Every structure is written in structure tokens, then in C-alpha cells.
Amino acid sequence: MILPGEPLPVHLMNTIWANRNGIHDTLATLDSLRGWLAVVHDDATAQRITEDDIPYFHTLRNALRRLAAHRTDDPRARATTSPLTPHQAVAIINRAITQSSTSPQLSLADNTLSSTTTNKGTLTAQTLAAFATQSIPVLTTAPLHACLAPACVIYFTKDHPRREWCSTTCGNRARAARHYHRRKPS
Image 1 (cartoon, rainbow, N blue to C red):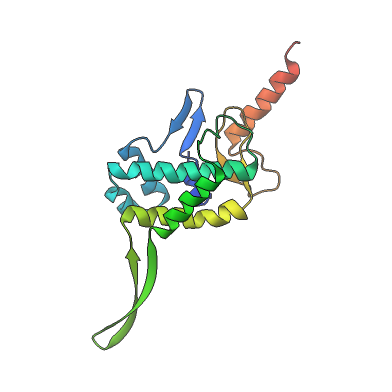
Image 2 (cartoon, one colour; image 1 turned 135 degrees about the vertical axis):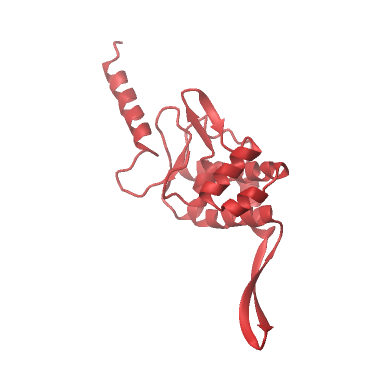
């Protein structure tokens, strides 16, 4: 599920989503990973991702979800199934950040000075580093929340003081469940 306006790390966290048929993984196959990356990040990068890269995206996503659950005191059992401890999740994110580096370089060609950027690390490492780097403010200062609607496993950044759910669908489902429980005979 891609919620508009969310930061890239939240998009990655939300590649685990649920509906009436259960919990789903948007990154389960190479085609689905490429399609998702093309929408949220970059189509050129998406086409160069290989089957071998899928576990790296899963690992970073699990670390992000574990820390989001930690930060939000997420009570949802379905959303917090990561076997990682918070310390392990922090180590995974820090390792992703350091696997790639970008550094500015000065060059002189045809008597003209110019600036270029040198990227170190594989394309996958660069992509994961971008997600991991952007996760720092999301996990530390952003108004990150867990959607507490029935059966939802999504995280979102609260962009309005009255926002309680990730989407209007979840809001409707939560209100309907509340109404049902109030009207349900004992």
C-alpha cells in the first residue's frame, strides 16, 4: 500500500500490508519489488535490481518496522512479528548507511572546473543507504504512528492533529467495528 506524502522509509515499512485475505508482502517477488521501486524511488534503479537483492530489502524493512513498533509502542501483534531486537535493528540501519557513500569531487576538463559526485557501493547498497539515511528523522522526530484500525499493519506520519488512521478505509472500518461492538447484544 502506497500512502501519498509519506517518506521513503515509511513506504518501505508499508510493503507489508493486510486486507481481508490476510497479510501481504509487496516485495515477495522480483517483479513486485521492481514495480514498487519504480513508483516510490526510481525506475532506472528498479530495472537494475536482481533477485539476489530481495533479502537486503526485506532485512532493512524488518529493521525499520521493528524500530517503528518500538517508537510507537505498537500493540498490534500482527504488525510486530519481527524477530529483531531494537539494538539489532539499529545495527542493520547503520550498516546500510555505511555500505554506500557519496562524496563530492572536483574535476578539471577543458580548462573548466566542475563538480561531480562519486558513489561508492553497489546500486542496491546506494538505494538501501538512501532509505536508511532518510529513516533517521522518521524514527527519531517525525510524528510516526501505527494505524490501530482492525487488521491493519500500516505505519503513517501524522500530518493532521485529528488523523487517527492510515486511510479513510481504515477509519471507516474502525468506526464500523466500534458501532458493531456498541450495538452487539451481550
